[in-house]
Length: 258
Image (cartoon, rainbow, N blue to C red):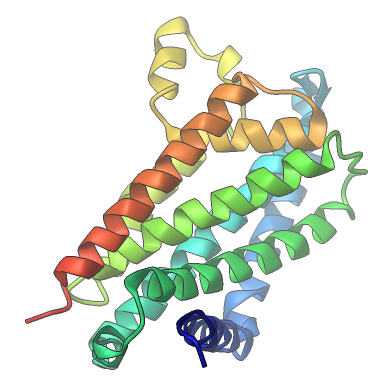
């Protein structure tokens, strides 16, 4: 077996383990975001949305669909990797991976692949639920799928970095609670930034989630508050930066090697 065949087997093994990990407990990993999103649709889409009317040239319930789908993708991609890799650290079997003849990029790819898989599964499920409340006429299938996957990759990488630095199970909940949740809710999921005063519109542009939500909204509905080319560049820059940082942390053994 040549070197690349061994790498492929290693990647497939890690990825399979990650997929089995969340699929075995689907009641805890897949079902909760579906229930949460359904409640959002009922409360914000049907009840409040009827009073708000149109936003960005589309009905309010259609406007929030992309953000709600992406919010589920972000949360689950992140959660899968941060909990899985930290558990590997806590149980000390990550050391077996590090001393094996497997390059760091294969290890990173396996864990990120598991997070992306969970994010995609949850995203597709939430999308199916959204069709019970509104008719989705996707504007651009290719763009929608691309942003869908890239966003999942980005937050899977972010979860990996959180897991590396975490020293306890409490630490893996700090970033989602105090960073991820505020960025998501202030990322234009429920409103257009055009509604904000000029100063707060400029402040909102510092939120990376805003670009992802609007890029995804463009793919689904064809409307966006942000230039989609700029949004794509920012997403790719974040992915490149987080990938390089993650590989650097693995190489130096930060949070892993004693």
